[in-house]
Image (cartoon, rainbow, N blue to C red; front, side, top):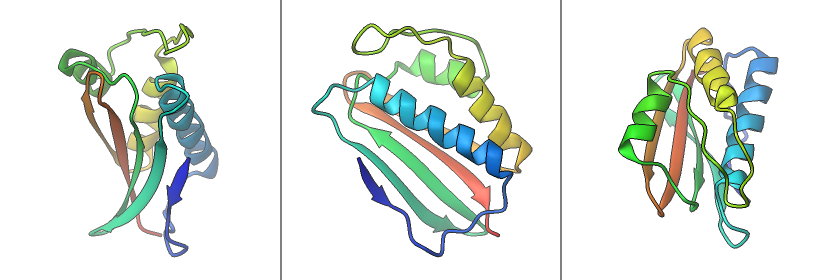
Length: 123
C-alpha cells in the first residue's frame, strides 16, 4: 500500500464517519485486487476541498456497476478470493460523504482497477 497524503491535509468531517469511509474503501480495494496488486491512497487540494483517492489495480467494475454505486443501488459482487460482499459498506460510505458535505466519484474499468475519490471540505 502506498500513501501520498500531505501533512497539511485537514478536513472538516465527523471522525467516526471518516474512519468508516477509509476502512470500507481500503478493504474493498484489497478484496477486489490480487495479491500482487497495488493500492494507493492519495490526497490533493481541490479548491475548498481535499480530494482523497483510493486506487487499486484489481478486477474493476463495469459501467453499470459504477452507476449502481453512484445511485445508491444495492448490489453484491464476489472478491478475487470469492469473498462475498453485501454492498452495504459502499452505500454507507456514500451517505457519510454526503452528510459531511462531500462528493463521491468512481472511475473503473473491468480488469483494470478502480479509483474511488471523495471530496471533503477543507478544515
